[in-house]
Amino acid sequence: MSDLDDPTALAQLVEHWLTLDEAAEQLGVTPSRIRQLSREHQLVALRLPATPGLAVPAEFILDGQIVKGLAGTLTVLSDRGLSDVEAVEWLFTGDDSLPGRPIDALRENRGREVRRRAQVIV
Image (cartoon, rainbow, N blue to C red):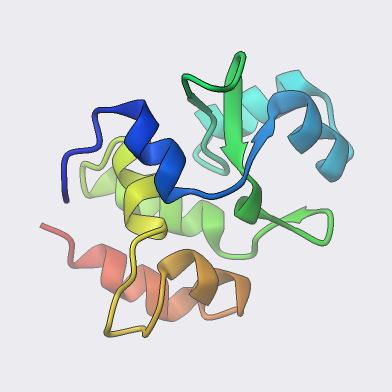
């Protein structure tokens, strides 16, 4: 994994971010539920310089639902020792073996492929 300790670099890697209120509205829940989902590794909410409070990558939500397979993938990534920032970086960085970005594969319902690749991260 490259070093994305700089939140600005992460903000540039992920094109669209939602505030907690926006994410909550799209999912039909409260902002406090978004925080809880983040703690449970079902979503990731990060603090970014350009966004007041926490922000969620917009591509984590599809048709009013959390992208199928995201929670399992985030759990695998966490179990492999990746931080939330590193997990987002991994999900939004192209992988020639998929091909494409893991988040795109998840959005295309190819979660099994994504989790297989996540399990071999060293």
